[in-house]
Amino acid sequence: MSITLNLRQAVIHKVHDSNEADLRSMIEGSVDGPEQALPGLGVIFEMIWKNIDKKEQDSLVHVANEHLKNVTPGPLT
Figure 1 (cartoon, rainbow, N blue to C red):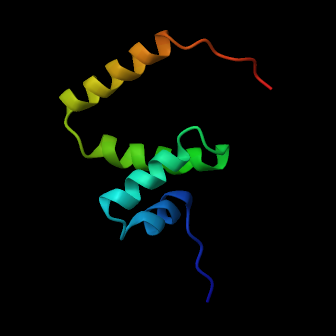
Figure 2 (cartoon, rainbow, N blue to C red; figure 1 turned 180 degrees about the vertical axis):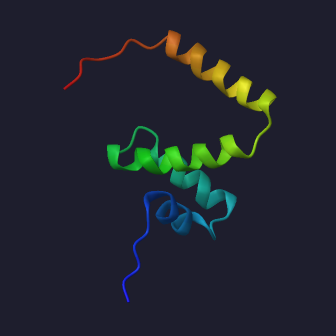
């Protein structure tokens, strides 16, 4: 019997039993880390987004927008 996990399931499986310190470590290890870690952060963000109210979503969008205004994109390689 073969089990195929999609990316969301794999990330959730990996962090499911994590405590807050473990989760923080995973997030901090992924930020500015290898590009392979970015999908995991995306799954975590998606979980947060789906479980917060519209006011909190608006706040996150505002923070992201403000930070993006201050970033100069590098060249695409």
